[in-house]
Amino acid sequence: MNTIDFENMEVLFHMTYEKKLFKNLYEHTIESYKNSGNFTALIEGEKCKSLRRFYKEFAKKLEFPSYFNNYWDSLDECLNDLEWLNSKQYVLFFQDFHLLLSENDKIQKRIFMNLLGSSVKEWREGRNYDSFPTLPSPFHIVIHGDDAVLNELKSNKEINEIHLF
Image (tube, rainbow, N blue to C red; front, side):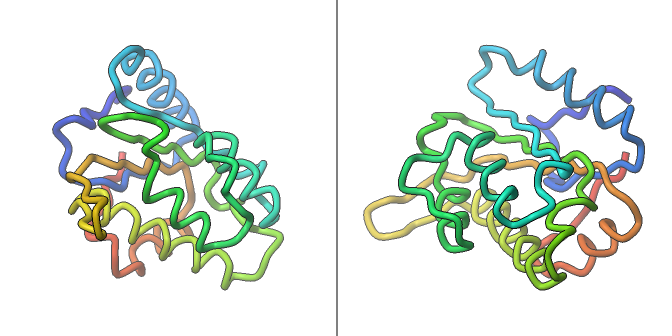
């Protein structure tokens, strides 16, 4: 399998153990999304081992505005906004997910997992905050990881289903 039909896929979390399959899907998605109004980014676990480098990688790959600061609330705010990207659908690829925040304690990784799950849920349901309502938008997470990552995903209350490929 080199493709996932993100446009028509109800499941929003996708995972594979195979790096080659992951890379092929990423390359195919980048190619097929050219001029489509969809946004795709690759977050590399190798570049996100420390919390500082983690924030830096997110800010760069998701083109965060200058008001972004290196703390969880700011990441949450930016991840749930993304209006500057002007996209109709988002697909975030996480290569070597098991390396994310590996230089930090497990609490930081758990905070991120909860934030990621709640962000995907907000995008799926849409939001109605004050005068800034947003319609539901597909927000897919594609992960290359191992059994520990799969167990982390399964233990997150915000993640209803995981598509293994």
